[in-house]
Every structure is written in structure tokens, then in C-alpha cells.
Image 1 (tube, rainbow, N blue to C red):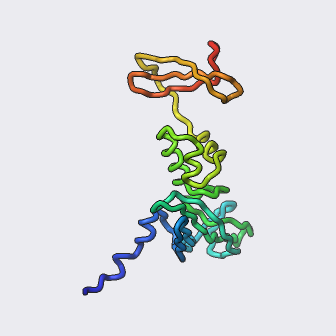
Image 2: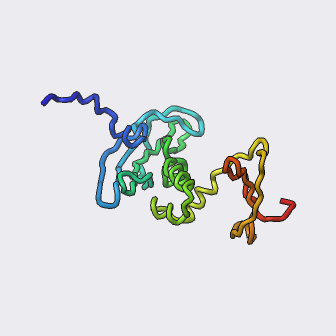
Image 3: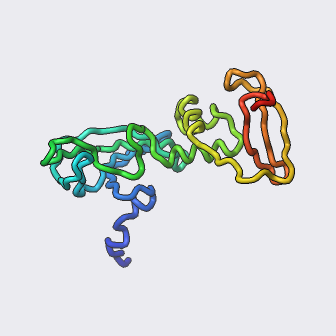
Length: 194
């Protein structure tokens, strides 16, 4: 059997997971969960205060991050985050990464995955159960999404009311384009001034 050169497998874990610049140090796999232990590749960072380049590490912290399900299992990333210290202004700051917004405990792609699942006319509860998030977190993710208003009205505009329980009103009003099957807007109530 011929031996395959090592360079062919250089970044296979990074490509499989879709996390650029992340080094996987360990993987734990059981019947329900996959836990990835990871850290960012060490690079020169720039101070968020004064812009000075530094490689001085102040300390390390670990953070548990939820990611999209893979292979029918829930995925957690335990990220070992570096805090750098600026030699000029003595400010401490975390290294930059592209997959985790500041103050978040879930990846960007998990939020996109939740939005995609909600597009399939599923309930908040079923999506929350699938990705192991609370229902209120799924609703918060949904509320962040904004849809642009149309530039012009369609040829046919359908207006209807439906019973809902949002905005403190009993009925809401929906505006749709029935020809193309697109929801244009949902108004908080059915009164004419809205």
C-alpha cells in the first residue's frame, strides 16, 4: 500500500467544519453530542484602543459555544480564547474571530441555521428542541431578521386579517402578493390608520 503525503490532509478538519483559522485540539464523541476543543491560531493582534500590534498574551479563558448539529448530533465547541495585552496603553482585549460575535454563545452559522429552519413553516418550539436552544432564544434570533420593504407595490395586493397575539392586539393585518406568493408586511393591528 502506498503512503499518502501528509500535506494532502493539511487543513481537512478546518474545511470539514468550515471554521477558518481554528485549530482543533481534541474531539469527544458520544451518542448524543460532539464536543470540539479548539483554539485560534496564534497571530499578531491589533489593540482595539490605540491600534498597536502585539503578540503579548495576558491570559486564557474558555468559552462553551453552540454550533449547528452535525451527523445527527448536537455540537459544542469549547474555545480556548486568548486575551492579549497592549504594550502601549496596557489595554486587554480578546483575539478576533469571524464565527462568533461579541458576547454571543452560539456561532453565526447556528443563527443562520435557525432562520433557515423557521423558513420551513415550523414552530419556534420544534426548532428550539432540534438545536438545543430555548424558545425565547429562537424568537430573539427571528426578531433580529429584517426584511426590506418592496420598492413598488405588486399588480395585485391582498389584504387580510388574522387572529394573533402580538403587539398587545387580538388581530393583525397581513399584506401579500398572491400572484408570487410573497408576504409583503404584517401590520400590528387591522385599523385603517396603520
